[in-house]
Length: 69
Image 1 (cartoon, rainbow, N blue to C red):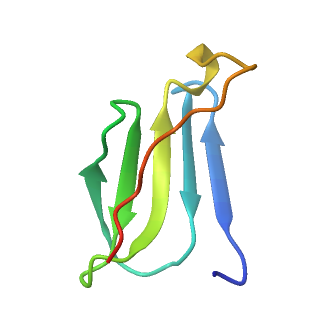
Image 2 (image 1 turned 135 degrees about the vertical axis):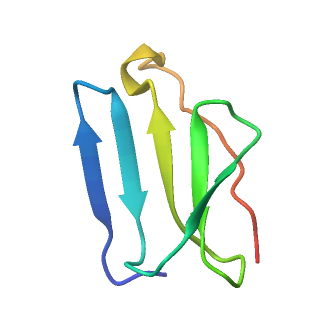
Image 3 (image 1 turned 90 degrees about the horizontal axis):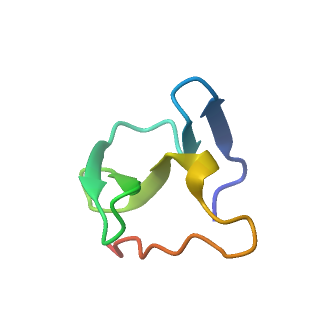
């Protein structure tokens, strides 16, 4: 588990990003069209992003599976 996380929210773009590491990574699709995962060269998840955050139902969690290395 990461010692700390970094969270960015851009209200104008309605975009949220959470990073567990400052390492270099690439964005990959997930099974949820709104969620992308950031993975490092070894395939480890180092973050994720959510597009269209405000459109989600506040009473239901957003569910997406992130890849395991």
